[in-house]
Image 1 (tube, rainbow, N blue to C red):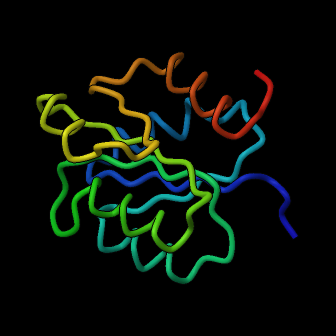
Image 2 (cartoon, rainbow, N blue to C red):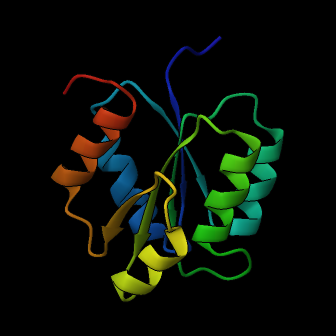
Length: 124
């Protein structure tokens, strides 16, 4: 049984998924990937463990904010990082009072690493 926190990275860009995976490689986490919100939702519904969702907002099918809302409805303890290259005010308005972290693309890897460690209570 794997005791590492599980992180699901959802983005339609393989390059961004690879960047996040490389950024997190120094942390004791298991990184899973999904290419869009629909695939991520199927993964979330079937997974027994998930600690952190890192998702892009603008994707085909289910967008990242809707995915995060659905996922936290199913798993209220789930930590969420939402990323977008879109206008931050529009994304933040959709997030509302939810405790989601927001990162504007391009994402600075060092800041993402710090936030993931903080959310998962891991030492750097």
